[in-house]
Length: 604
Image (cartoon, rainbow, N blue to C red):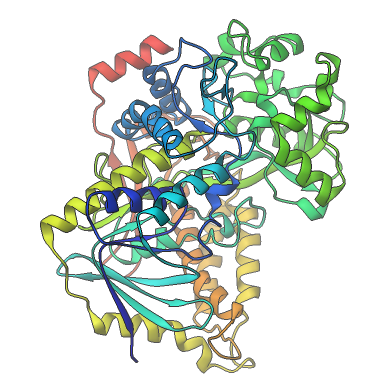
């Protein structure tokens, strides 16, 4: 098999916010950069991030600072975060946002012309710089323009099937053009993974078709360690009805602008369960909640803006108690603000234009006049590739990771808006240090035999007839149903052990997958390849969740419903054993410096 081969100093896999920012920084350092994206340039999942980018600019409330942001992030992550990453993120996020503004991003403004910031779940003060509810789109547009300006080579609609290593370090990747099925090999001195999340392992998800855990799986099979895979975030407000919009995310910005959660009795049930740590910051009644959303910095937080894991569990409590909506959710109502605000319809359309237009067009729901029927949907994974805090390099030399496919900053639960500033802060660091690594270590030799073996392996489905093989769509659908049912929001030991048994059966079936036709324009083939990644990340999630015998953040076990202080001392790490099986271990969290401990105590 002949390969078209490309040579780069730094190869970036993934063209969302983290990948684009890494490519820009590596190119700025003088490296020759190649950028691979599974879809089209600009069609990244970052575009779906609507609420804003979290950074302690203190433009709306001057009490905000990096120290408060750091403390909020650690508290939201239930203190199993990589504290060094949380520190760097809080300190550097304001500069990254101002940098984005300097590159042309057009943010909403305060009356005196500064970047406007809004309230969001888990953040003490208004902290999210935003562009209406299209912040991710503006970020991608700005970063994409920078990449084009710097002449970075982009390979669009390209699927990576394997990372290549040589002499114990990353040396490139092999994959194929999705359109024509032609293979290419990439030789690189350093590789940056920025492939996003794993949401397609579940039936109900806000993730688009690209979110199949490619980067997690590629890194794992290349010998890198994964961490915190048990922590899956179920966003509390995804649309569940009508079917035309099922799974579409309703941005937290709706609640930030005054939206309230109601059960079928018309009651704001979030007041029923407010964690002790948040009581002094939570509004006592509807009126205070409204004052807060209108920007009165002396008012306290409405309970709808508690952390996502908590809100999701409260919604499920209402559903199980028989107080849920007809289709298994609750109601999110922002139209009620007409009682308090003149011209509320225009206010909602101006602040939440995407929410208004998409639900009006796709579901004939007018959010200025009626509530939305919402429920938890798989949204984000806090777990990912285990990386060095400062450089973002994985446990494989020369292999870096940033964004959702990297672990550490979020701990047990991500605060809304931290994902976009995470992309900027650690995308920059990954690109910077990948370029330094490439310069210091030179080009690695590409393993042609390994590249050919990887290509041959993904072609085997064509060798089976439809009658003797399995349908990849059927396996993927069954896997998603199983993960939703057995390793979802509420978990138990028995159900997760059943899930492991079913995963073993799915792997056997996946080895027998067949596809018909040829390599050009063949979505069945693409699904068969994605399936291998989904099985890897599903097993990592399940094994890690079994190991963590407590409830913390996005991980809730019905058989261990309380937090166990002993489990706050380590992270769960998964690695590929010498015999090819998945191994799970507990890795102690390094002691936090006294100065950072004091910051958390001061902000409590």
